[in-house]
Length: 389
Image (cartoon, rainbow, N blue to C red; front, side):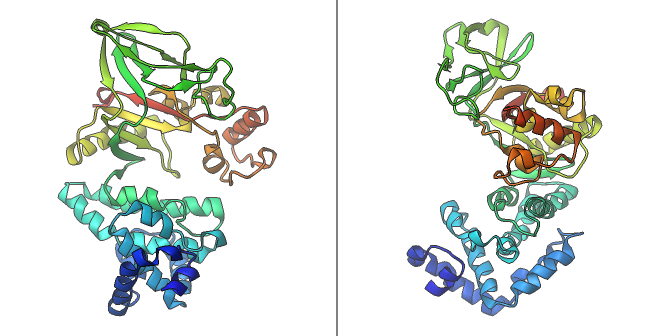
């Protein structure tokens, strides 16, 4: 077994822990042969079929690759996250198409269990199909960044689909989760208001420690205090936290959302248009499906660099993206400002700003912003379910 672990650059010091999974994998390989590589039976790949078959056939030239796929699937069935962290990226340093793709076959082997669970929850058939098809979408994202097939870096993201935390519904991936940010959200006569319950902020109003916001000069701690009649805290205005407290009377507001409440988190996969009509339709239908089939939620949220309040200025006009962002009341989250490398420029984060490609007017504007020393920051946004249904 030690030779097997060394071959795939896996932790040999944990051989005692890994041995039962290895032994089970050997039994499955003997009984099932190459069945775990039969990705066609899941019917979730279309235009990528031939390329994935090419990689699969190359992997089959070495029987140990089959053994690894069964080995990883045995661990995957336990959902032991710590163990998966150490075993789900074989020969990660090689940046080789075969090893970058190999873990995908273990993930795909969980699709039957995912579909069975989806049926139990009453998930519509088209949503079941589209959720499974996210495996092709994610491999395409990997190709865009690396130039060859793979799933490395997206392994745990795809687990969230397998475990019914995320459903692909129309244009969006919708995730049922608990609100994890340290903000309370209030409904007032003027709309939603967000105030941090705790946290240290840069003088700019961004979270201290975000890119370009590391110095302590003018930094402040924001806490939210509740009295019998009011909330006293630091308001977020136009996406940044203000260093000035306000008093919000309880008689003039209603708390909509707090950390730990159930929410529907909106994710925006690549490759499709996002018109106002599509956004309205798919978020409304998606929210209703999630609440009916998985659980009730307090609100919709989105945590993304796409909600940066600077984007309308960069684009200089109203667009589908700016109207999507305007739907949310937004607050800052700690951000290194580097998400644009992957999602705007399709480049590794090590790429010099001067070398970033300008394949669109948006990419050109973002690059100019970065060359001038600016960043696009992550933000968390919230809107009410009643805005849709």
